[in-house]
Length: 214
Ligand code: SF4
Image (cartoon, rainbow, N blue to C red; front, side, top):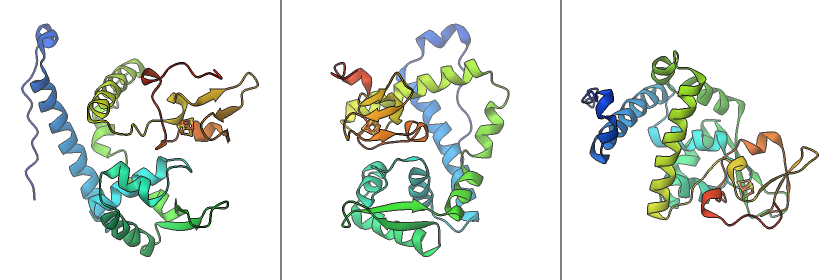
């Protein structure tokens, strides 16, 4: 079993302002190692490899424009061949279904089955994370999420990667006076549930000019 690194040099409050990117890297690396190990363990308990869990998790929270094999490959940074094998295993295990697009039968959408959804609900977020933050206030969670979001966006921007952000934070997301929502890119109506989903076409507000229809 791979060693789990658990020690990060404590940082005194009065030295936080001097924290450099090396220490940040150390924290993020240890945190991601611990979380990945816990999810991996839970996935193996369900007979799934880490990449299969990652694909399943992505498909559990992405929208209808983003649940294609190409989008999964983009999100995971893998080749189409590797993703095809991964999706084949998930389908063979009854965790997802392939459905043809109603407008273009050549496009395939990957939809989680009830079993697939229950696997994700049981394994993610990992119990170890829930235990670590269960005593945090809402404000502390918001602050931590906001910082993580900034780091992630910065990394994606620096690497020229798609953001795969949540729909309601997108430049193209329009909220109307009557409470309805619309995607100004596809011109389709969005539901409240759509607003909370991840999209491969997401464009962060901070990288955009104000939308002409906003
Ligand atoms: S508003 Fe943005 S994130 Fe939402 S569906 Fe449209 S392109 Fe995707």
